[in-house]
Amino acid sequence: MGVHRFHWSWQRTWERALVTSNEVPWFSSHGRTWDVLVVGGASGVGKSTTAYRLAHELGVGICEVDDLHQAVLTMTTPDQQPVLHRWHTSPEAMAMSPTDIVDLHIAVCRTLIPAVRDVIAQHVEDGRPIVLEGDYLVPELLDARHGWTAKDLERVRAVFLHEPDTSQVARNLLDREPEQGDQTGRASVTQLFGTWLRDECSGRAAVSLEVRPYATVSERLLAAIR
Image (cartoon, rainbow, N blue to C red):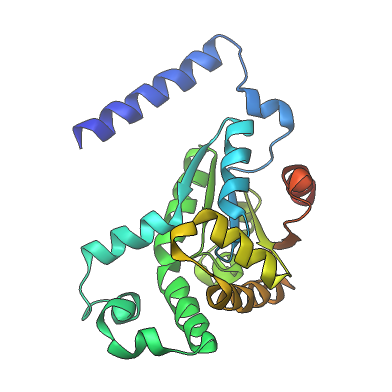
């Protein structure tokens, strides 16, 4: 708690110094119109690499939703949050079909929405920009039924990266985790979830964007949310 207060105090001091010296943070020159940028997508498509590069280039903070998921797991029991704990408590989980795995993952994402929503709302309220990225984000996060106002959503952007080629996802996963060997089976699950995310973006306050070509993904993403 003491460390948190110190960090908050230091940040506010830094922000006040910028105001009094008439300086503008570097990222403001890029015409940023958001406080929270949500970067979602299935595992292995390249969203974390893209999100970290963007956060660095724009000079803003970054938060991995995977960390929020782990924190909630640690703070709860299977009785309190059975969906979140099912991977670790159900013997049949490892034998699930790809479709059932995706269905469970979507259920976990939906269970986490209140926690993720509060993180987003706090940054919108405080005006502290952040990139929020991870596997546990779904387009419906920004639906009005979760308590968002039109004013809130003016300060939030959401992009879901998609890789349509399952073999490319398998190569990405193998490059990232070579010790795991062939990733074809996992890539098929990723492909199912990625396609579902792409389709769910339709008609919502979220953009679906193909991640390749990798060299231009940052520029294309920023252009898509302007």
